[in-house]
Length: 83
Image (cartoon, rainbow, N blue to C red; front, side):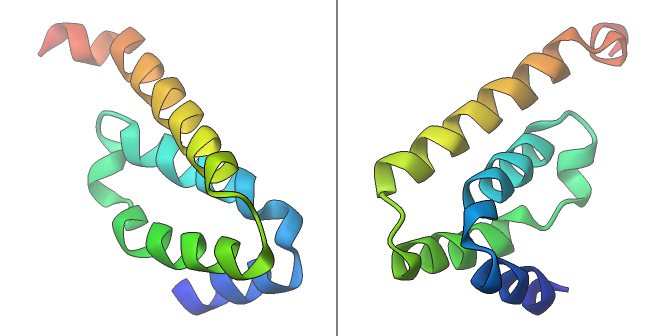
């Protein structure tokens, strides 16, 4: 699974930023983050971004926005308020 994601991103480097955003977003969700292997994929995508020539500041921006969006959704989730 990881190889297929990385091979897709090698052929389509325009998707690297949005992939980082999506992985960090899902990782930041309340329950879904437990089942997401983003911890294993993100370093590979970051290394791929470096070889493609994407700025580390750009990757950090998309990762931060994914984290903020995921945490905001999790905080607003009614399930969170019940627990």
